[in-house]
Length: 62
Image 1 (cartoon, rainbow, N blue to C red):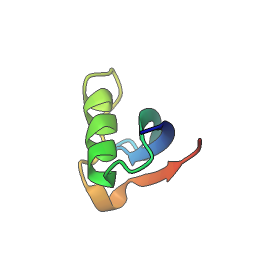
Image 2: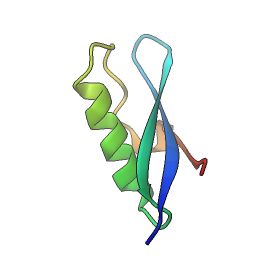
Image 3: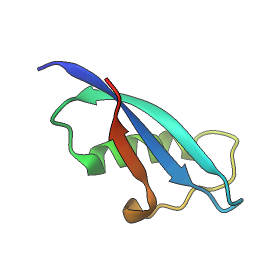
């Protein structure tokens, strides 16, 4: 199984969008990608991201 790079954009309460690079297999579940990015954001210094799956933009880049 080959690893791919995904971009996950999370909207936050400050009106900005924070984008995270997630390395995961090509057949990764979108919910798993969202969870990985959200937990990374939650541990950082940025304002709280919306924890709404439908608000995230997820796409594979490589």
